[in-house]
Structures are given as structure tokens and as C-alpha cells.
Length: 178
Image (cartoon, rainbow, N blue to C red; front, top):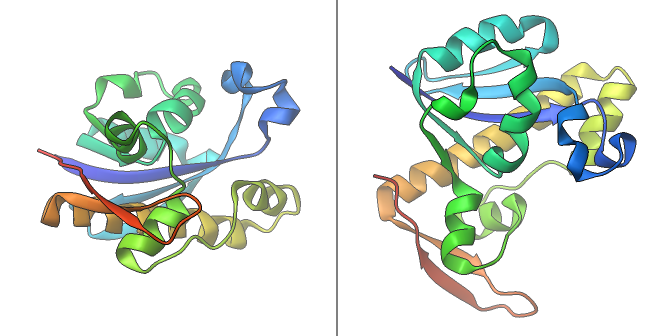
């Protein structure tokens, strides 16, 4: 069974749907995936979500960043099965449990794998609204690449460096995936 690293982008924002209490009203524009079995990055548009659903069903682990809180609730409406039933490693959730606070993917990536995000979430919504699908897919897949590199580092070394707010100091945070 496959392991999948994934990230979603949405067509709309929380401001468009009346706040984060209405996360179920957000619509996914694309979903980026890295398949360990295929050693390949794939980006799915909404018309291809049935194929994506089959990939999810064939996986025994999904990996994301803030994916339990955001990606999964948005995606649930697109499938006739529950993503919540697939074993799931959410990097941010794991960090938050130990650290007691959230940290951005871009900051975490720069500190640990020397990579960065190529923009922010609102950029993705603008790309979608402007019909710039290749920019949207590239943005989404960059987030998947960053997330994969962080997950691979967690498996390899069992910790991440966490930059401290308002300081150049870093904390070595044990983060394990079994």
C-alpha cells in the first residue's frame, strides 16, 4: 500500500464562506500528491478527484501539514468514503502537541531543509480565479515537496529545528513518526 503526501488549494477563502466555522463550504481547486510507491508528484484538478479518491483508498498512510484541521474537512465532500479512516500523520498537529503552538510551513522548511514556499494561500485562490492553472499547480506541488522533505527528515533524524519568535535562536524539537 502506498504512502501519500498531499496538500490542497481552494477556490475560495474563509472570508468568502463566513469564517472558519464554515470550512465545509470551501471548495478544492487542486490537490497535489506525492506517491512514495510511484516516486512521483501528481496534481489533480476537481475533474480528476475520482482518480485521486482511488489513490487515497489504496494508501495506508496520508501525510500533510495542518491537513487534519484543513485539507481533510474540505476534501470529505468529494469522496464516498471517509478520509478520516486512513491512517494520517499531520506534521503541524504533531509539532503543536509538543511545542504548544503553531508554526508556518515556510518557516519550518527554511530552518530544516533549506526550501521555501513559493507564496501564500491567497496567491493560490488568485491563480484559480485568474485561470492560471499551471501557476496554481506549481504552487501546490511546491508545498507538497516541502512537506515531503520535512516528513523524510523526521523519519531520518527524529527531530526538527523550530525557530523561536522574535529571536534567531532555535529549539531542537523531538518529532517522531513510527
